Image (cartoon, rainbow, N blue to C red; front, side):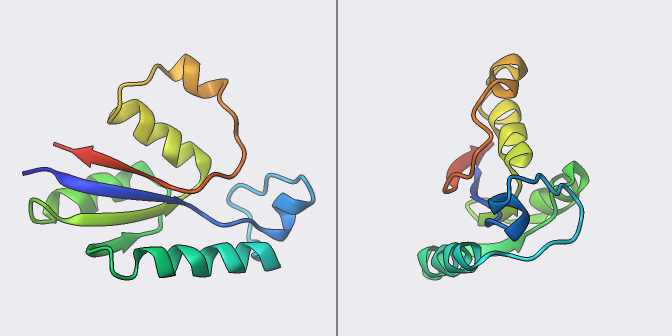
Length: 114
């Protein structure tokens, strides 16, 4: 039985609103970002999520996901590149297509692993 992955894009920061891509630099959520983060929590509260992973490093998914029981739902919160990595690894979308894709904030999506 597969593991379901629920991906939620990390929320909008004050830097994002100023047009700055802060990457791994520390930052603060904007007012809109705090609202969107709260909405994500509300949407997923009764969604059967077994765990929440917030690292955008590939080794986190490689170390955390295999230990979940089949049929588990796992919420990963990350940046757009994390979503693109899932699009490539799970959905098989070509990297060239993903590199040119819109980089803007989007509400999450769901994947099935296995």
